[in-house]
Image 1: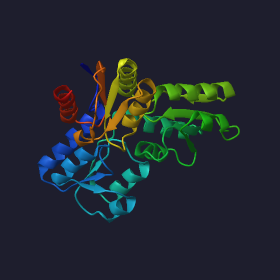
Image 2: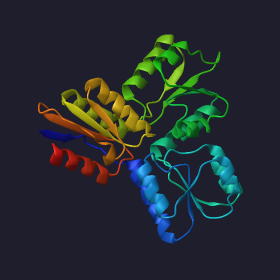
Image 3: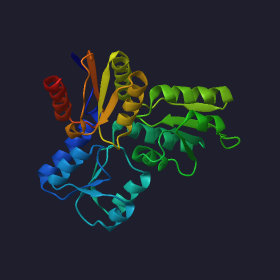
Image 4: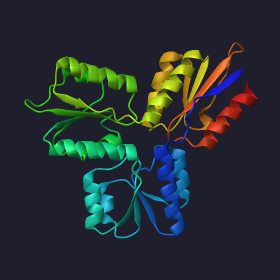
Length: 282
């Protein structure tokens, strides 16, 4: 039996950068807070909490803070959060993924130009919530082709279309095509990060050949859910696990190829544990 690991599995550039920044702050001995979960992986968050890192879960908790260092999560935050930090003279470290930061700059400029923003992504995801916070009142969030078909932009407004960095690339292209057919005066910017596109393409390729596919990542991780969605379409026996304890497989003898992929917030240690488990037990 062959085990094939997708290229680029595990921590992406933005997550590595955010983790590095938090560990630098831990070394200072200061009281460290993250505004929201730094990344979407519960095991990593537990590890950080064990080192004394605390999570601020709301704007109200931030407003009550008077000291310590606040680390802005990799998903980014609304402009208002920066305003609060500066107004209260709180020390902070910006761990926003540079690719997310780029979207903030795009929508901020589009807003100045009087455009209406359309964000393609999950409206409940913290990255999207953060982007919305840079758009003022001129914004709508769409997630599905059906929503795009029904959508009518404000009359007389040029629009600017961006995507959540971890959105399904093919689905984004489909939605943009729907807008093009409607003939809107839009400006669509592909803001899905390259690592996401490559990870999705590699996962799709392996899943199409695999007898069984394992997707590793946090249950709240958007990019991992997208990987699971993509792999499930190609391989009917696709499993989504968060930890090694979730892996309960009974493989038939006919299995020739087991594929493994992992989300951008999945530690390499866990990926190696899953590989070794499959290798030893099957």
